[in-house]
Image (cartoon, rainbow, N blue to C red; front, side, top):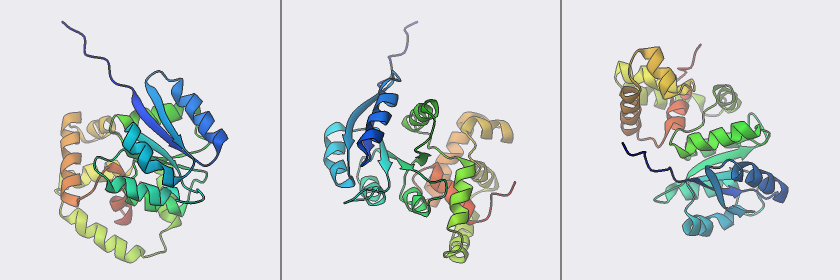
Length: 226
């Protein structure tokens, strides 16, 4: 029986205006063995040509940069086809601007003081197509921006969720709580493959790009109790 071919390394582009931060991230990720840093940028305006030339799988994106900020750069990247996954780097647990990036299709976000091992694990997850979603930090984000247009967002979110089957709503709520596919499967007594199929149908029905956006809809609908 032949062994499966080795997986290609995850290609990462680091975008941050602090040279020391870029150097530290590059050293941590580059030493993992299965992640390769294919480029660095000091500002959002440098990102498009680097993405076109280096074709990263994941872009680690700082928010605050002098010319083109990370939020604008993320929106531009996610509008492109094919688009790399974008992980936002932030200093704050509850930065209201992060919500804009998540709604634009970012795969999640990491705090700049994330331990090296967790950073590597997070990039592996995103590279494997499983966006990062920390329930505690996401709840803080939602609470931080809850006052602005909360009523209209809740109404729209409830309307979207009403179009799902009961089982799909259960899966959506579990996604909103930050559960992995394996955790959802165990909790709802179904196979991981069935969970993946439900998530795919939810994305299609709601017109969303990834699991993080499912979670945001669930949050807006008030469906994250417990």
